[in-house]
Amino acid sequence: MPIQQLKEFLDEANVEYMCLTHPPAFTAQELARHVKIAGDKVVKTVIIELDGKMAMLVMPATFRVRWKSLSRILDTDFVDLADEQTFQDRFPDCEVGAMPPFGNLFGMTVYCAESLTEQPELAFAAGSHTETLHMKTRDFLNLVQPMVLNRGFIKPGAQKPAWLRKGRHQPGEASEHQVSGMAG
Image (cartoon, rainbow, N blue to C red; front, side, top):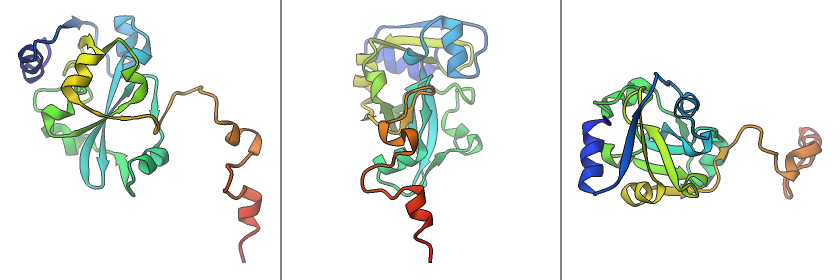
């Protein structure tokens, strides 16, 4: 059963969901393998520190954070991975690393990768490493109302933008050769 707070929230909202029990999964990728769902449909919840405040990033299990890009898109000087010791008390009924992507229930702003919004359904840890909750994406978006980001994430193996391939530089940026030649 999902953590009580989440279960009550979903039941009160009259949202359909399904909870599955599986062998322990300590990463979102492991969870995807256990429940036999593509990693793009499994949610990874990452707690970040954003200018001294905790926030939640929600992205596909297959994605990684692009810290510099995320900092630019959020218009902040400081974005970093939060230390588990710092936030574990905010999720009292959850196992560390198995927080559901409902930051709104825990007083956190939620940022969601746009690619998740294009999935019909999502699966995510339900507060433990052995339970996964499945629900419709539209219900998740309606209940959480995350800020949707179309940048700040990268899927490993994705092709680099053309300007990064073959030593090209982005328009308006100096190449490495030009930068090293500017010292003086």
